[in-house]
Image 1 (cartoon, rainbow, N blue to C red):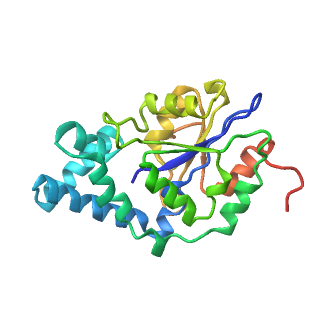
Image 2 (image 1 turned 120 degrees about the vertical axis):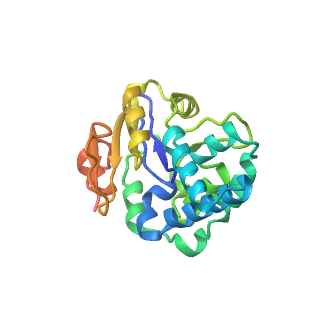
Length: 237
């Protein structure tokens, strides 16, 4: 599953990224499993593949490009917006995602005079907006950099072009002022190579990667408070 995040920037203060899309709740909400089913169905239906071949090709494209739709658009006559309608927008998110008071409190406690909250996602804009609205955190971010399915060729994480796009749209002064949190090992690896301060979120149910993706690894977003105390408001309860 492709994840989302947030860049943060203020003049003289580093940009940071707080994950949002399904990376914040995928394991407990089963979104990942639901998305895998829909992607699998799309491969079978539109490429006329057997279930086994569809699974293998899906995994191949994800490993090579970090995003299934990248492989589909590069090697097949697939309309990205059709994929979005049948996969991302077809997810029953209203039955799965619920507001998380702890998540909202964490994001509210970030000092916005030091940080610009900016989302970065491989999803199309409709899916990203739907997720943050259901989580009731849509008012806490200043913008979204998304994978524009309406403008092939697609630009997405972990491409350096996608990270550059986010920097431009968020008006980031320099790569050294970017802080990034993501649940994808591949995304974190390439962000760290760009010079971003990168935090790999590994859910507690998953094993610790044998090779670290980046400088930092956390098991919970709450660990950001102790990792980067300078970005949080003083004397918060």
